[in-house]
Image 1: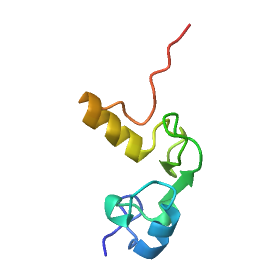
Image 2: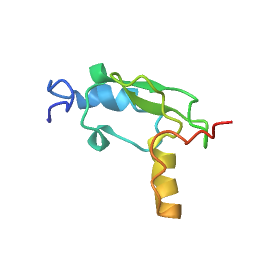
Image 3: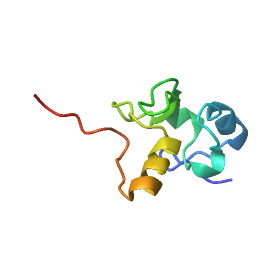
Image 4: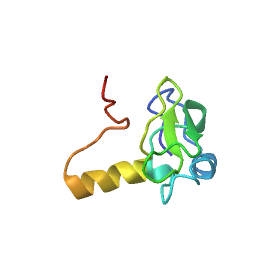
Length: 89
């Protein structure tokens, strides 16, 4: 069991895995943050329409879920980050 990188409490992997279910193929092993320090927003990914993972101390909801961000990095070799660059008009 490892501590949460945010609050340092021990991560309950069972609860985290349950919360991460909408995030395609991800498990508690892919995160170092506890359920109290994160939230999952359903239907927020602009690419697949899936859920995105948002640390509780962040005010911006990401545009890409972890799986789509990883796919984009693999395909393009470029990390788009969690949010798209919005073109200003």
